[in-house]
Amino acid sequence: MSEGGETVDRGFGLVGAGIMGKGLARNLLAGGFELSVFDIDPAAVERAVGMGAKPANGLAGLCAAAATIGTCLQSIDAIRAVYLGPDGLIANAREGSVLVDFSTGDPAVTRELAEQGAARSVHVIDAPMLRMEQHAWEGTIVLLVGGPVEIVERCRSAFEAVSERFVHCGPVGSGHIFKLLNNVNGLCMHAMYAETFALAAKLGADLDLLLEVLSSGMSNSTILGALSKRILTAEDGPVFATEVALKDVSLFARLAADTGSPSLLASATREIYQLAALMGYGDKDVVSVGAALREISLGQRAGGAG
Image 1 (cartoon, one colour):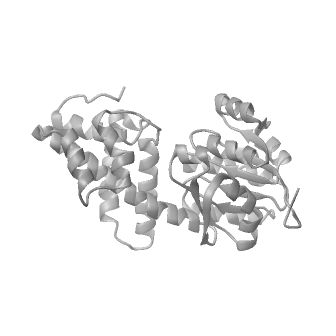
Image 2 (cartoon, rainbow, N blue to C red; image 1 turned 180 degrees about the vertical axis):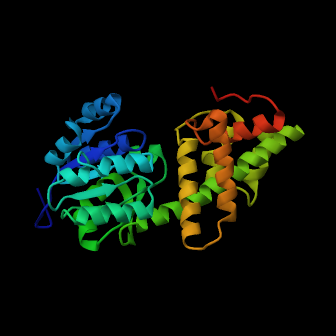
Image 3 (cartoon, one colour; image 1 turned 30 degrees about the vertical axis):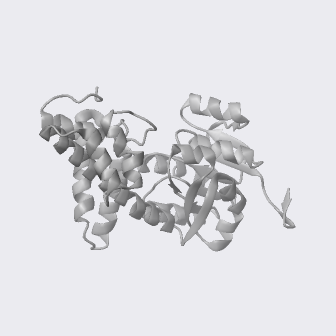
């Protein structure tokens, strides 16, 4: 297929078709890409196949099927496992292939992967996503891309298929830096809302009225509407797991420490998410941080953890 006189490779591989990845799969297929998918969860693969994707026979099979492969993974350990080792993407990708990490990752790890990829003439770039599951499904996410201009341009048609827009943030790892800078603000705000509602519950204040008050003044925010409102009902909603939030804040704090920059609020926020995870809320949506704090404040279970 040609775009503007230039031949565009429409083969694309995807590792991770879960919460956010299923949206990537849907929109790549809608954009005319021939998609091959690998996921350790058979249900995720089956769902993608139902949309028109082809199942890949492991990572090696995915590399044989496509020269451009995206990854959408929840942890740094998972990213390392998928990219590195004799069975990983870097070892099995074709020469000249492009590997795009859509995950929220560690900039230092991303640069390490890019270096190892370069030794095999494989390009590794980062393109973490802003916004939530619904936006990934609708194709209205924003991508924060880090990598050489010419490699980013090779992925333009894929990026445009899955996103509202993409922002080229700089060299490899820059996308992940900007993603962490973005995420820590939202997570700090959410933790403060959780503390506020926990104290209000302890004081016997009307929580619905509190929400109305917060929404009417300078304390209002997208975070309040999208996440903290669900503190009132302990509704799970779309799952952005507490343990994933903990990973993001921890990466920010470590990045700050490595550069000698203060991260007082981020470090305090990290402790809140760590506490909630230790209380059994790690695999629950971040809204459960509010339940964990109320549990402590009120001295009783507030629902949620098993």
